[in-house]
Length: 182
Image 1 (cartoon, rainbow, N blue to C red):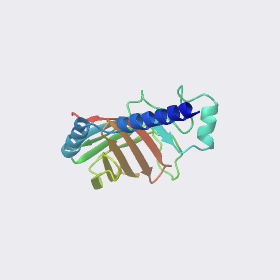
Image 2 (image 1 turned 180 degrees about the vertical axis):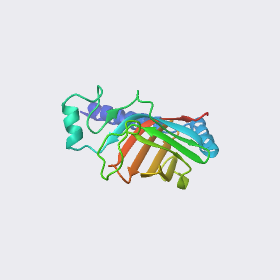
Image 3 (image 1 turned 180 degrees about the horizontal axis):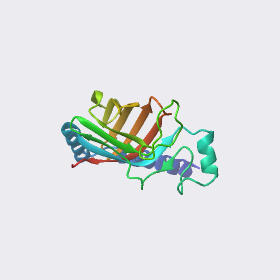
Image 4 (image 1 turned 60 degrees about the vertical axis):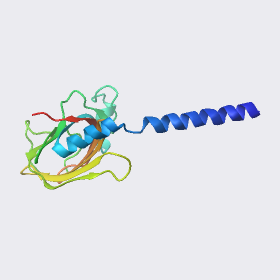
């Protein structure tokens, strides 16, 4: 019984140490992220969309119309080419959208996703409160819709985006972070 107890404690100790060490960012990763942020030239390539699941999306998922491995609340968009770019003082986005339109607006076959290219208002970049990384916040208007965007950027070159629109339900994206070269 003592041996089993000691083995369990040892296993849990090793598990805790290995998990803790894998979550720490290396100095090289932190330096690369700091450089991207200071240059204001970075891009998030969206891999997953996370819309607010509702009856419409559940019906689409039940009908098998979503990509393989996707659910109504987590959709694989890795082949869509969706992105958010910060290039100096400008922000550019072309992200696929899944969800519901809440207010009237126009429908166009050319503009079905979240698309904007402008100089944002209220642009801020702050260090993350916990751990390493940055929190980027801005608002932008595409002429019809207003968007509030929050990007959480991590040293391991991943990112999480939150997009709130004046006309649509909120959506979140997960993707890879890289330096943007025009």
